[in-house]
Image (cartoon, rainbow, N blue to C red; front, side, top):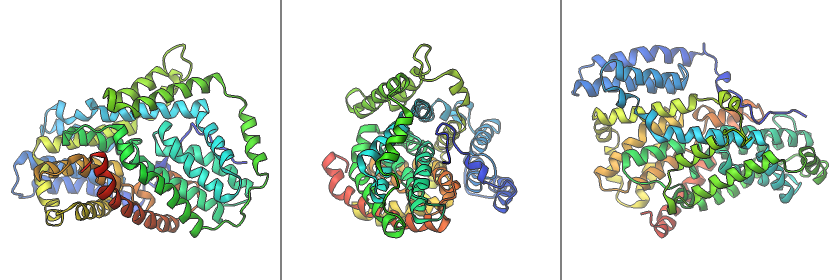
Length: 479
């Protein structure tokens, strides 16, 4: 059996060729675009125009992957400060924002779940209760993927955890890469891990969106309220993803060889619940309960995530060691901080006002009621995401615009922000998400498979969202 260490994440960057044509073009554009914007005869105040020039560098670097995301963000923040566009506290404001540190806490919780083994145990436990036929196992994998979102708030980490199980199941089914059984499992796990991150405030994208909605929109975003608002969509997505996968990729073999004996053997290998797993389960349960009840205590989700993560590192607690913290990949945290900083700089230099009037002005005539507003917002975000490949950079650059647009036209910032963030989940290509890149890197499905399942689920999510905003959201006070 092929084994995958759930605590070691494949690097999406390893899939990229630094000498590819797109990267080379991007590196050239990273020089040309800022210079053209900086010196162009535009009818803008100098500070606004110069801010756009640096933003142009950051966005081009993110779209084309001309360099690492975090590096491009760091350089952009430095240039904002070094070229005296804004003061240091503004240029690096995202590093003092709780959004980036919420992600840091989420990463620590992910390490707690994987290092303790509790995530893998939950996965096998769910499948033992679901069944041993392929349709039931597939449903069990999707349900487990969703449940793991609560304790592993990172789509990439969940894909790796579930991939370790899917690899074993693929071998048990005698299903090589490209067969319907293995292709269906890896495809649906990768895509749903990407979508679930938008229905629950988990992962860099939704965490970034939440921070910007609060900061720029001036409204409180409760973890529990977000979860309740998208709960019907979560349930429908689980069922729709399961049905579509079975429809397009019917299994060559319906029943798992060995059946329940295979799953019980895997559980036996893990042994009884260890003290480490018990402590990890207790700690993560506390975090989930605090997140679910934030409407009562109003403690920031970032405070909860960081607090629980740091508590796991304390001496004598025995869940994480300082070496785990040293091995943690901090680049996503820095990238999110840079994206938030960019939004703050655009706000401080009046760049957001310019973008709001030019980019979103065309939408106003169509936003006459909740139906047309949802349609325009959803599909505009879907198309916009093709240009900004990274959903973090897409949300980091556009959420401030959506918030300013909502406030200036008397619309609900929270409602529009949630629609826009949710629309970022619809994707057709692996380059649009690090989660999809990791799933694609295992080699069990092709790019055309992602386009097929992505197109159908994007339409399904759109229809469900229309129903939510018209009938369900008003019932919970979101209108």
